[in-house]
Image (cartoon, rainbow, N blue to C red; front, side, top):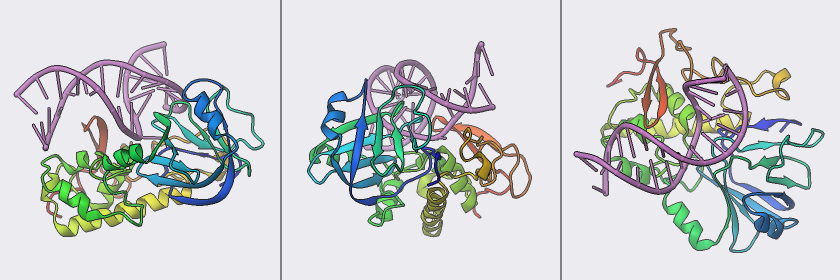
Length: 265
DNA sequence: AAGAATGTTATGTA
DNA sequence: CTACATAACATTCT
């Protein structure tokens, strides 16, 4: 992770063993001044990622549950000016990455029971080694909703956002409007593997899109027209040059290539 | 400067 | 129970 890098929320992160690094927590206002005080200086054992939910573990039953929502970000403050606003921050002593929790939608201490409830609401996360795709298929079997809508439903499969949805469907050459229940076993297999591949790539690069090196410390690059995206927010399909379709599906704008993503392929 | 946006939850309607 | 539309939340970017 380069100095000053901002890891956007849609980059997926994986469960990490941290070997007891000390966590510095500051929360001058807002969500959990008490929780921050309770956590500050404690040894962090591990971060578990399940879908878009993060669980910071300290070796006892309680965990810090974080969801970055639309705007929470990972960033490094070392050598940089602090964030312009006073925000809740999580920061490692080692001075690696911090987490800017302003705008995050969840940040709370939860016990084992609450965690079980949380996980029960989530489908399998393709990035996790213990994920069971069959569980997702069982849920999908009854659904008449378009596969493009199903991919955003965290109860069915956890961790896919709007960028990935578009890119996954494109990579699979799938018609986004295929009813979820009608996918063949082969299509499901490809969907799962493609999801894993794209998410891992996003994880490696820190973002699903390519950022010119010179820009890494600068303002976040635009998603539109960026190198790695094939259809998301593009006017023309990166592969065939044809016009990209766009339509709101499941409350978010879906982008797809009508020429290449056709039923029965 | 208005509008859209990488997300979720709650609510009302069939 | 499924499905869908809408609003609300809050922040950033175009």
